[in-house]
Amino acid sequence: MVWVRLLRISSSRTTPWFVIGDFNELTGNHEKRGGKLRHASSFLAFNGMIQDCGFLEFPYLGDFLSWRGWRDKKPIRCRLDRALGNEDWHDLFPDTVTEYLPMVVSDHKPLVVSIGAKRPRGRRSFIFDRRWVGKEGLMDAISHGWDGAPDQGSTNFVDRLANCRRERKAEVPIGRDTIEDLKRQLDVAQADDASPPSVIPELTDRLREAYQDEEVYWYLKSRNRWMRVGDKNTKYFHAQTKQRQARNQITGLYDKHNVWSTEDAAICNTAVSYFEDLFTSINPDILRTP
Image (tube, rainbow, N blue to C red; front, side, top):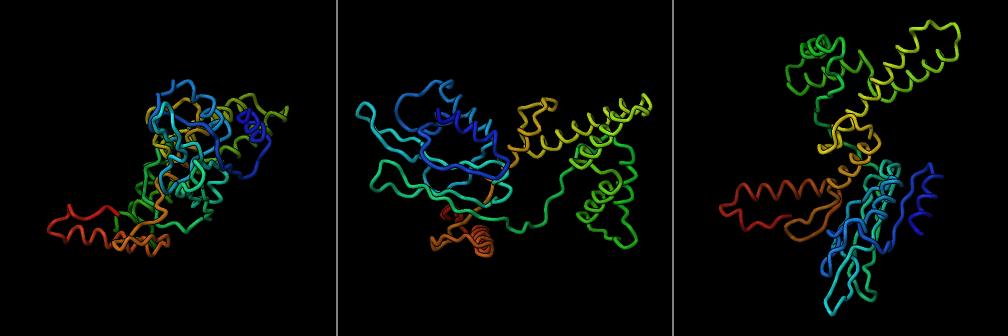
């Protein structure tokens, strides 16, 4: 079966990859219009393949119901065609976009993928990192960061928050680097017969705590509130974060002259123009959503 072959390919790949084409399957009844509803269990195999391969959807343009046919003399439309990429692909080409073109000759819509490399990111918003809670030195770092160093004596609220973040990061590193460092220390201690009995349990506890901190971090970024912290699904949370970033990405906008723009400057001007018109109009209901 195709899904088994894709899983086999996925297990041997360590590089970015993506697949595109007619999968002849849906992820759920929300991807069809018309016809009888299918039982939820009929989608398990396809969804399982997507999750096990680490595939994520791309943002798309156009109507994703890519196939049209007839069942019992009634029209039915389904999303049988799609493009999927693994997490490494999304990291390398985060601006990848799929577009469903008009159906002309075939009963399937052509699917075109535009591969986009990374764009420079703007200033990120501050989000409190729950991994800091309960850590030694947290309050001292916040106090020092809020008051500001001699060369950073800004009274700006955002700058003060950024100072607190820098202070905390400089004092106690958190994340994958900490995990890898603790793993190296644990390997050395386990290979050294002269290590005191207390060293290995201490390193093991610190490593377990670091893994828990990492899971909390990706849980917060994924915003998947229906899964509780502690389910050991860091990889899942990480994939959900990438999927949300792809879904929330603005790839382009139509301006008031119905011209499609994908350049950053043009997108910014279109958005500004729309809201300027919206807040200066005496009848904003007549404005069309961009």
